[in-house]
Image (cartoon, rainbow, N blue to C red; front, side, top):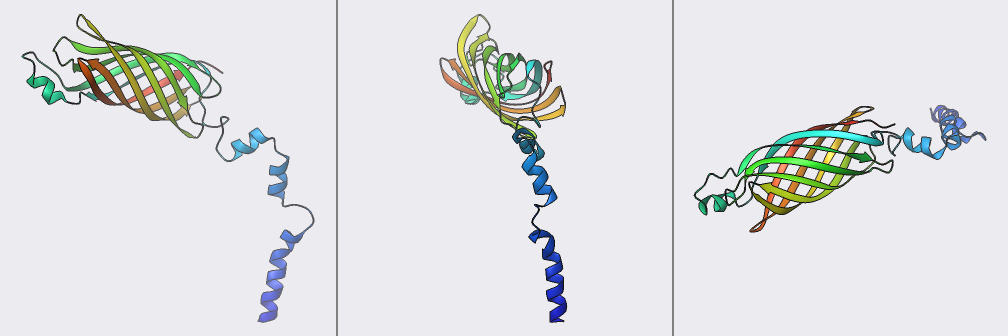
Length: 199
């Protein structure tokens, strides 16, 4: 029995002890670095949407933090949570950095009941390379509510899933910072779609 085990071990180990490298390692050793990275599902060659111009739209739910306090301080009607929607357009670089402009209708009312909050903003987004791409974005611009205009900024994180070569689905969590008498937070969760027109 012991001799049989030794013989089986020798036969099993023989291919690994051969002078020539294993075929799989030989193939990997001869591959260009870009293809080697892509072979394991990482890098910008796999999962990355096309670079170039893009257009996207999303919808979800937004709410105003401290909304109960805002409602108590005004005699008007204040919607502290509502459906929101937005659209964005811009240019995606090969590196994963995108320069973009957005327009958003948050659906919620300013605390002084001056009007529903709408935001026009510009900023950047960076998507990290993978099959499901996490991204982060930062935007800044004016918030419009009735006749009033207030400063606004946004920080967001999310995930993009490449559906086809030119279409991605996005899930985004955003936090809008609004200067409405004092700084208020207006978080939102949105699901969207983006179409690219590059190579």
